[in-house]
Length: 272
Figure: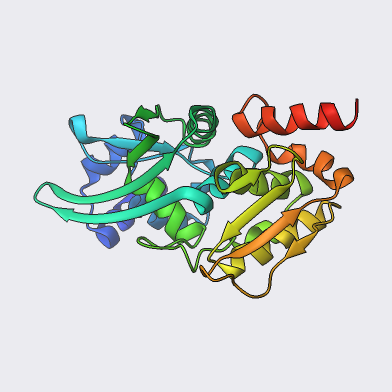
């Protein structure tokens, strides 16, 4: 008992933490500050952080939380793909403090319903799309989620049209994860031609086009074209055009969404 007490006394001196406060963290509160947990790990040589389920910050009505990400899954991958296509990070310094914002706009409600499901599954929050005049939007102000996108996945706030690329960790992931990333990208930034079902992706980011082509090829789907030079508008193009490959490309659209229904209807005519 005295040895245990001595450990915590030593810890309190090192971290300048009041002993009563530490006791409350360990015995009364369902939470503990990360800096306290980090120091406990160093002194005890026990890994505590791998067991963290939620992160939170703020107090009272301004308190925010999010579920921690332990490993990649298909919802995370699809969410990241959708963000690459149409998402935006924004940091603002306001009179009420710093704002860490995730903003998303999309024309089709079926896509936004899919995206909100992915986000809510990943972070266990309650996001709902908002109907605007001619589109739907998602707005999230959450420092934890913002930090995941910047510190873990490597995105930066502000304009990303010409520079966005797929985070490198997805290239060594499983085929299910690769397919989910491409699904997010093509659902939100790709197109399906009405007559032929040809799948196209246009982007001003050469890295995005070539990265997406890389993942699609890894999945055993042959693309028809990935441009190495931009068109007169500064855009690069990726195309899946052969009938056999278009059929395989149905996996890149969430079942029940607008582009899935369009492509599936075309395929039914082609292969009837």
